[in-house]
Amino acid sequence: MAGNMGWGVIEEEGWRKGPWTSEEDRLLILYVKFHGEGRWNSAARLAGLKRNGKSCRLRWVNYLRPDLKKGQITPQEESIIQELHARWGNRWSTIARSLPGRTDNEIKNYWRTHFKKKMKTPSDAAEKARIHSSRRQHFQQQQQQLKQQQQQFQFNLDMKGIINLLEENDHRVPSISQEAQEMASMYPNTSEHQGYFYSMFNVNDNDNNVSAPESSNEEILWDGLWNLDDVLCNFNAASATSKASLHNLVSPFC
DNA sequence: AAGAATAACAACCGCCTCTGA
DNA sequence: TTCAGAGGCGGTTGTTATTCT
Image (cartoon, rainbow, N blue to C red; front, side):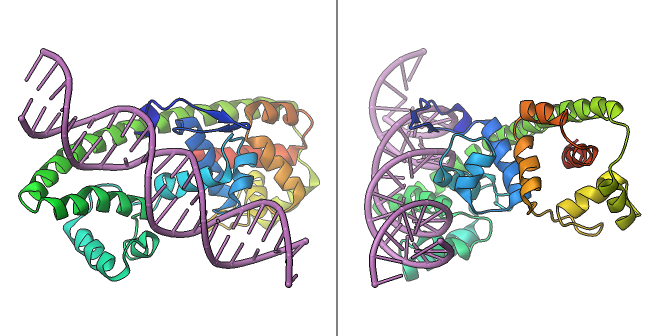
């Protein structure tokens, strides 16, 4: 819904406000994918987002986290919410911990729109709300699927563009640095590029988890990734190893 | 058909706590 | 011990979508 909400985008002291764009979402997802959650002010800076840290955190926690459960609150969840609210009151984050995939914001909104209403009119409001919610849910699921398909398509296009540019430059720099060759020997079951990538991001062949690079050089490399212009600009001056790592960094997305 | 009412929820605000220098 | 910055939390607002009259 955020994308089509008509809030004017306010710029205050350089910070953007209002609804997030799909591009901003994409940048934030990429940041978290490689740096992990936390250090949200850094996220804003490194990802090139003109958002403050709080806004980044909120967007991730309430909307972008991959483990979020989409869809209607189930009757089981509803009864849990009622029970826990009776016990803890408006401690939404505490309640949310008992409902995996649900956020405190979501539960808070649900409570306000459902239970407060129910307390006023205990008639057939619940049934009407359920029907209404079901219809709305169906519509939203369709819209969500469509949006995700569009975003994935655009994302793949972007990444393929980067890959193509990297490959063009690969032809101009045929030699592989000694470091890359060492990494290739350390990871004999992979290409030298993958070996460097794995070592750089602390992953192995059996591990899909990727952690953030630690050294300052790697951070510089990482920072450069966030802006395609920067990538291309730095590329001409970068080592073959760095280019290989850049290449492998974006490959999984294509 | 049109306007009013309501539901839903993303996003912001302000306060509080925690943590590290 | 103090202080500043980061992050967490609950309350609230603003907007769109949908239903009702």
